[in-house]
Length: 374
Image 1: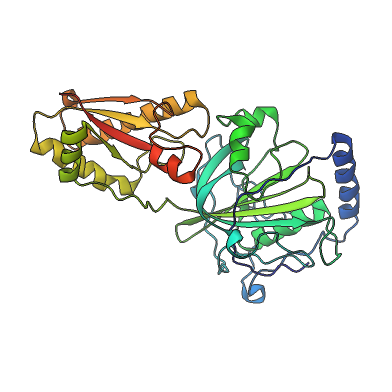
Image 2: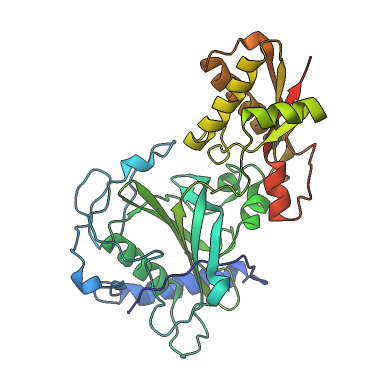
């Protein structure tokens, strides 16, 4: 089948209606029987300039060739390390790598195909984790495409598996959605569905596969899914991992001092790793400015207070904001600040300063505040 290259990213959507358990199971069984009769499986979906791309052998986690041309798990470790996936030696086509499969038409068109930055959940090993970055989105009607050329669920998933493998990608998922798997995410299914752009429902009746391509220090996370929708739909999300380019400039030491004198507190927008208390490298300039503030006024004492938006569980966010405030505390002590001048605490979503119903409001609520305590 032919897969041509299309550069696209897109906005959120939802599918209404799910197939019944028996119907979905029967469909998968029937499709599997058809696929089993195909000589060598479906053809690999070519990508842009595929004829000029050097081929790579399929290998498993141990580096041994695999049979059947299906991408294999790069690692089964509980804590997944992206570096366990070897970098691809293939000349990658432009992001997000793929054009529409033969006879199918992407539901996302024009400006509606672009999401510059958002979160997406991937099954990695036997748990679900979030990644953030630029998204390329594809959604296809497999059952009633405009061309009339129907695709089965097995054919759709298998062809993308082949195409991703040809680009040097590795499969990193080892499970399907279940109550146990959903429990690995704070907020469970509701949290995942908030960021469901181009994926099948997070349900055991759908089929989900995650892949990773690494090249030149960049990470490309790919989620291919299908099933549990009426009509039968196929979905692909390609995420280029990256930190958000903040549109909110940070304050220097002098501006922080002015805010503290006028209001007794100042809000700072500091980048952390997704759902973690790890400061990102671009947070260092802010740490340096806080250090300058404290150095210029040896009597100043501060409470470092973490806040989140309303996304996810409130208890989890309180713990996360507490850990992030503590991370800032630790970074300042590491710069030489006397720890007796600092305190830290987290409030999670309990003290918003903007409307959590909008992305702009959520961005403002995800903050660390310095509060003058003397």
